[in-house]
Image (tube, rainbow, N blue to C red):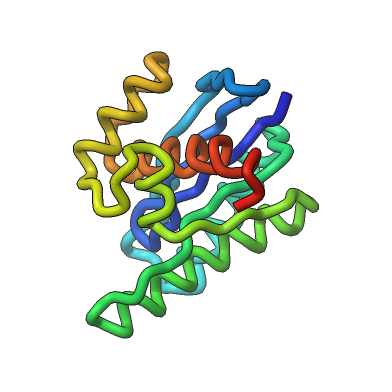
Length: 159
């Protein structure tokens, strides 16, 4: 059995999920969204993300982490801010000595839907089909589940 934490990093919303995998069987454990206070400055929001992801690792004891690679936006400031949030989550996981696997958004979508440019609705539908117990309430939560599922599917092929 392998327990995977999937993380969809964001400065305002960091989606997370926990799934277990045994062979080709997948089991939903939990998911949610880390919501740093918008009123806080950047360093405090990053510290909040770090602490919350660290707590998730302590609570669920994942064996592996799957996280989305930051894509380059038209706005460099947005890309940089997303990179900061991603780094806070990565450091929290790395601090627990959990192996981290990084995937581009199009590879995650392709692993789940067979289409690298699938929209959020297609990803959500596949998450629900593959893990009926999952009831994601936000796109960030759904994406985090998709990231964990994609890793479970791709890791056996050493992508």
